[in-house]
Image 1 (cartoon, rainbow, N blue to C red):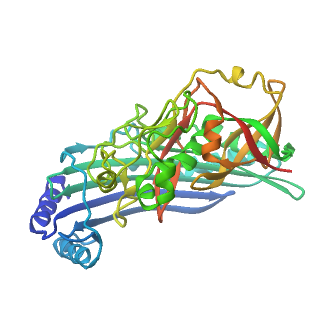
Image 2: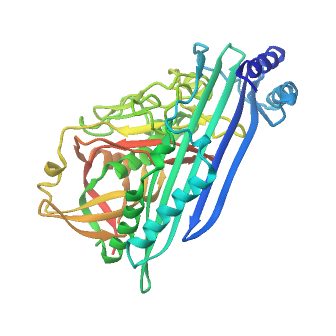
Image 3: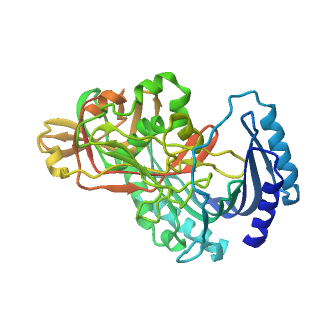
Length: 461
């Protein structure tokens, strides 16, 4: 269906809505998924989907929602969403004011993966899988995953907004498992890219080789000895750290609903030294970033939002609702996984800004420390965190030394940020990211330079 036909249907339904405010989001998506486990092809599928989401505000109530797959049901679903809103006994929701946009953005892909035959995608992934298996005799098991999707969003609301946006996304994962006796070590190398074509997945043999080599290296790494160390985080792990430990605290739906979080995330509070600057943005210059879009799923421009400036908390992430509740400006952070979900306050591309210290100077005076790289997962709860690095090295007398494993970083976020002693001059984005929240998973970007932190508790042997 052409965009003009979607617009007519949406505007007709909005005109007939009895609600105080109504928004309609219709999505079309096409995609491919290929999975190899070892030399066995497990999944090779193409998919297509279409559906819609309605959200209404009753005059004296909260939100009501409805989803649908049959476009002929749109007007009925608007009435159902309004009925749900009227049935909710809740304080009347307010929305921050924002200019209704009119915007159409079509994807510009180099090699449009929608035109690449499935057999080519299978062949590419089979080749990467074979590269991992051939890299070392210790590699006993592998898994490789390719996925692509173009999600086309048509959005309108009763305040006059009209948006059309194509959102392409590519995922490529290489997972290698090395075994020696009873010791099993796993390494993952991945990329998640937006707004790019199939050419980004061609010739990625080094991604596969790196996964195999790092799994093999971990077999020779000794478990780290637990203690308190100066720690240097590489850009990937520092990006994950700021996303998980700090970014979620900046999402204002969490702040508004949690009295303890309101006290902890008070604007003007000093979080770290003057060298620490943190931001979240959906409009970064790198077009491949997974969190980049022109507008969020409420029709608000995805501007850059400064969260920490020279160590001081200066901003938060908002939907229109949370911005109105806290008397602040909407930031374009209301995002929904797909038409089955309502938008939540979500990060986009969250990062520590570049500093001035070289990596060599950062480690030069460390007699004994830990250099931790990439993330294997972790947990956060308000001010506390626990992260496992994917791999790590000891730092001895100012030099990167032997590999170690089982490195777990734990502590209190607010104390840890105060202990940041150096921020590198080597900023890099990590484009491999999904963020889960309330049952929704969204692509996000994370970035940072190298960061040095003093007095970090390292769990280990």
